[in-house]
Amino acid sequence: MPFVFKQSYIEYNPEGKETRMIPGFIVKLPTGDIVAYSRICPHLGCIFNFVKDPVECSKGYNFKPNGPVFACPCHLSVYDIAQGGKVVSGPAPRPPRHFDIKKEGDQYKIVSLEAGGIA
Image 1 (cartoon, rainbow, N blue to C red):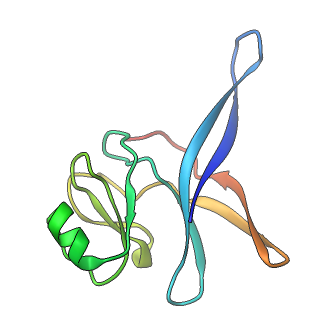
Image 2 (cartoon, helix red, strand yellow):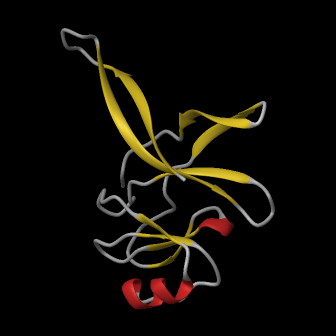
C-alpha cells in the first residue's frame, strides 16, 4: 500500500524547519511481517514502483524475480522486498531506506525514516 510520510527537519529559516513529503510503501510479506520502505531510489532519487507480477518485471525491468519487488523505471534497479530490500538488479548502490513502524491495535503507524541521504 502506498503512503506519504511527512518529515520535518530543523532549518535556519524564518519557519525554523523544512517539511518534506516522503513517498513510501508498506508491504505484508509472505511470512506475515509488515515492512515499510521509502519509494525514493538510492541511485539518483527517482520514485520507484511496487511490481507484483514477476512477468511484468521481466518485461519492463529486464529482471525476473521470484515474487513482488520494488523496481525503478529510471535506471531499472530492482529491490527484493523479501530480502530486506536487497538490490538484485541495476545500478543502485544499496537498498532503499526503511521506515520504522509501530503496531497500534489493528493498525500500523509509520514512526520514522532511516537516517541518510539518497546516495
